[in-house]
Length: 200
Image (cartoon, rainbow, N blue to C red; front, side, top):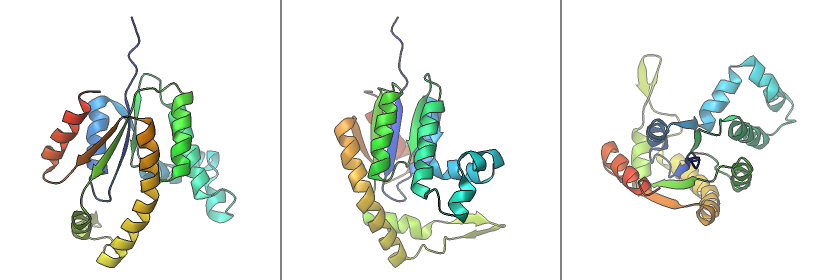
């Protein structure tokens, strides 16, 4: 009997397109390791053993290890340490072309052949609408991020898209590509996403 290889999903998208929401859904649906770099870095900061392993104090204090190297080391180690029977969801990562090329190499080296590239898209106006209305719960009160104003958002979006465009172009040449609009309700977007993934 042929061994069924796990599916791996690279999930990228426009800012505020719902990567966290839909990533969590996909990870549960397909039993994937949810590789969220923000969460990995937060866990690293709060774990003395991991801080030492990844030389985080050197990164903060002396600059010997750049943030880029730290992210690459984390990506490499998570790919290698995830059991072969379990797929990986790259939730909003990698965002830089150099990291993308390394991820592709490590996936190949690790024998991960079933890879799908998913991009969540929304118009610029919707990105700004969602991000300016976004709230976080902090110390018993809801508050917006301090940098969520229109001009700051436009600058962040332009910087993000400049880098992510190269990553998208690179992955589209390697893996099956699905682009999903997340306009409308979350259930509507989930339905579109699952419908497109079914053939894989």
